[in-house]
Image (cartoon, rainbow, N blue to C red; front, top):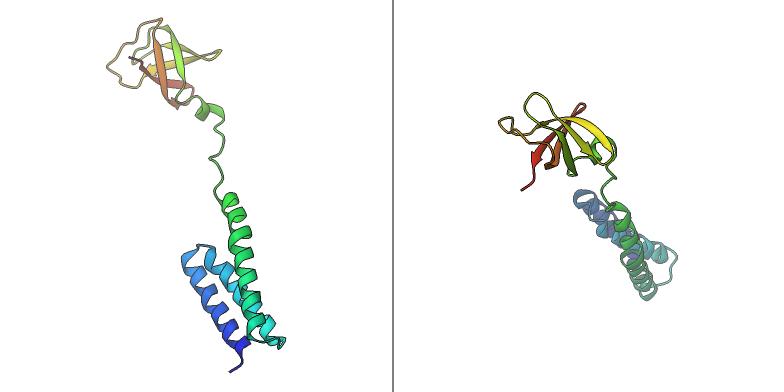
Length: 143
């Protein structure tokens, strides 16, 4: 059996293993094995095949994989809209009870109610916004 056939079988096995694992490393080694197979099919001999495999493997694992992993591991998306208000602190403008209340988040006034409905938060207190429910902020007093 010619050596280039062995390289292509190795490339197919590595490619199949890559599909099962999703590590990206085995796929790059499959490409390197295919490069060794192409050199073998050209009839350049085993040393040239091994050199082609080694160069392609080092280039793939050392250059391509780190770049690809950086693109895969993107930072979390930027929170906008009401989701950006969750976790911020606010000033209580009117007493916040289970039925009514006003707070100021940044420069905006919001209707609010306590996250724990048994609480009454007095005006002038500082609270944390835990959730936005429609146009109402659910808040909890800071210690």
